[in-house]
Length: 88
Image 1 (cartoon, helix red, strand yellow):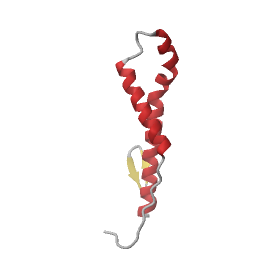
Image 2 (image 1 turned 30 degrees about the horizontal axis):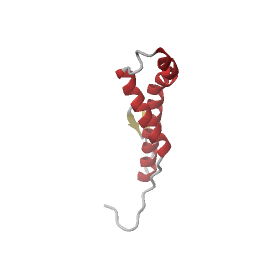
Image 3 (image 1 turned 135 degrees about the vertical axis):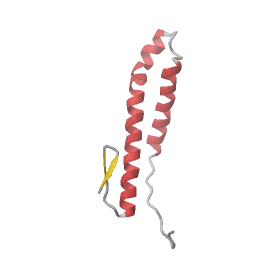
Image 4 (image 1 turned 90 degrees about the horizontal axis):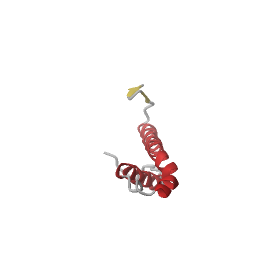
């Protein structure tokens, strides 16, 4: 339990959150295939459809590891993640 006026440092990235939400919608669209009947729309949106999953995972990984780094700084412990295991 912490007492006093301890303000935790939290950095927010609203642009990345919005982009992650859009990419999640595009991933759903990949599975639903709404443009399957129209070749022009399929050709127009294909680059976005091809990039949706990698961009979504890159943003998620960045935000996850940034959060881990902030938690390490806050706790004062120097831990590293190696293949999912914490190493001191």
